[in-house]
Amino acid sequence: QRIALASSELALLPFAPIAGAEGLQARVGGDVAAALQAIAQAVDENGLVGYWPHTRGLVTLTAWSYELMIRAQAAHLPVDTTLRDRLATVLNQSLRSDYPHLLTDAALVERATALYALAVGGKLDAAYASELARTAGALNTSGLAMVVSAIAATPNADRALVAGLLETLWSRVHVLAHNGQPEFAGIADYDSDPLILPSETRSLAEVTR
Image (cartoon, rainbow, N blue to C red; front, side, top):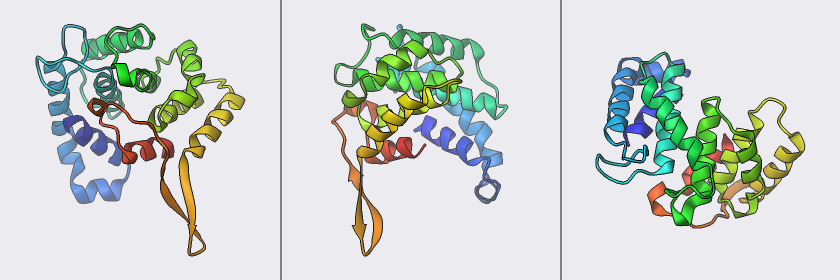
């Protein structure tokens, strides 16, 4: 919740009318600092961030934490760079299919989430991006969207590969005609572990991005 609040405020800052109306400039620094403090207090012995202190960490939550730190830096807010780099190291390790701390029922999605977060931080591993791209059919919509975003943002991205992934991605989004107008009719998706907070809203947001 702290990460979601801070991330949404950072995302809204460029929209001056909204940011001004909501008083974000006065709040975002404190909310980001509170989120970063909570992250630092919830890192487990494996270097992964948990939902609370002294609980098992998750790759997905670690990726969200690292992404928040990168976006906070871009907004010129103070960040613990030592912790940031530690999280990046752990996320790089989690890209391996044999990484022991992936959730069994959500391993591919967790790896995709880690890949995207590292891409946001400028640390994309092209080899793992290509590997995950080959698993497109097995990824849920959110994971597939993050892989597409990560690959598309790289210099000299394989446009044919991106086009194929986008075709697969949009085939998951159902649009029906209603009174002569196209209307969103849901997403064809796969079940995911509830620990990674899957939702149609999240999936649609990743597709839109």
